[in-house]
Image (cartoon, rainbow, N blue to C red; front, side):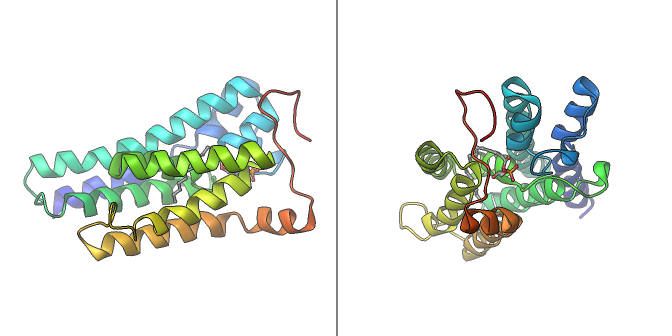
Length: 212
Ligand code: NKO
């Protein structure tokens, strides 16, 4: 129906807000995509513009994913979806926000890797799963100092958690969606994976000067 189409468009447009690009250009006069890893994400913003900028971009990118899943409440209220389908629509809207983040219409379709926005989306749909993924991210990043390795591990873990009885979604389509999301985030890291294998990936230190 009309409302579902509007909701989907809103989720994509919300995800499309290129936080890292706009924030860097507006406050630092820098397009972060021309520096560091070239990625329009929180990590590269941190790398290029510093702690404060990275943290702000991270928070806003998480909110984009979270807020997009909340649009499902509007559909529920308008009675265009039933409560049985609620979670599935949350997932659909969240994935659209992640796609918007990766392929932003407002930044020449060159966006980020979808990590922070996925985290926000998972927070909206499965908060406990989000907490576990985030915990594993912190652990892997803390030990390795590679943000990308933490992201890849968490994104791989996410769909596997949905196979556990504790988190198994009612609708198997949701599990399939989880695998597609996880695979997309991992695939967005193909350059990082190559560098990790070669030992050339840049390390990120939260409490020390800068990169490397
Ligand atoms: O510039 O290529 P780069 O080194 O910037 O960046 C690699 C990095 C890109 O991602 C980001 C976002 C950083 C967010 C850090 C905290 C995220 C913790 C998220 C774990 C949960 C993920 C769930 C995924 C479900 C599919 O990787």
